[in-house]
Image (tube, rainbow, N blue to C red):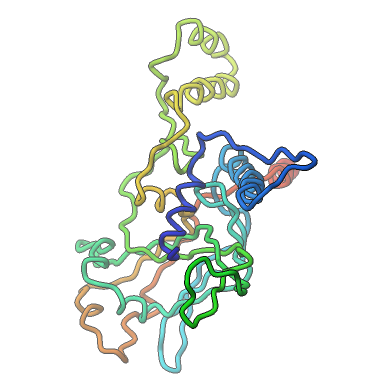
Length: 303
């Protein structure tokens, strides 16, 4: 299976929130094969993912800052993503255990005009990019296996381990023109509307209105009423492949590059630095964050 096909298969399985999970029922004398082992691993892995997705949502827990720097010999603008940990849009842990770096001029030269136009604002002369991260699996520890077909002078090998890894992406995209203040805890499901759901009954609305004097409780009950009907009777979001990839991504930062003329990048010479580091602005605070109990306790002690 190719890496692209494997990634697609993993995304589809991890985005399946509707199918009940199953684990192996061990009994003496039972013959268990490869499928049983895989089911056991899948049960525990996806159970944790679902718990993180529904109970915590997605966001940065700590670290993963995006920074810009310059190397003067020769001049090149670099983007760095520092170590950190978080949860991606499908509830999967993303652990960046070391710093990653990309030479921005090399990346820009590798893009097509169509790709860069997706993030270019003609009016302001700015090229916008977003930095995202999501979980990825990596096949490692290849070793010889019994060939299932005629082996033509080559040894059959198969990965003996699947290592947890991450996929960092740099994507041309204009920033949203207006802020969406709807409640959005789950990346693969529609955001929860701020208005009262149409399905709410008169008795339910009366229960909420009875607590209007208590501002905090009233607001909480209004949110609970919206959450009550948020899934529209189904857990399966039914996403396409493109939507799966987008919902899995965890936003880390948005980058604005001052480029009065996009042709200066498209027609740049191989040795041209393309981008001055002083023309690059990085905003890490547009990302979602996860709030832990220890953070809340600290904030309470600080007030």
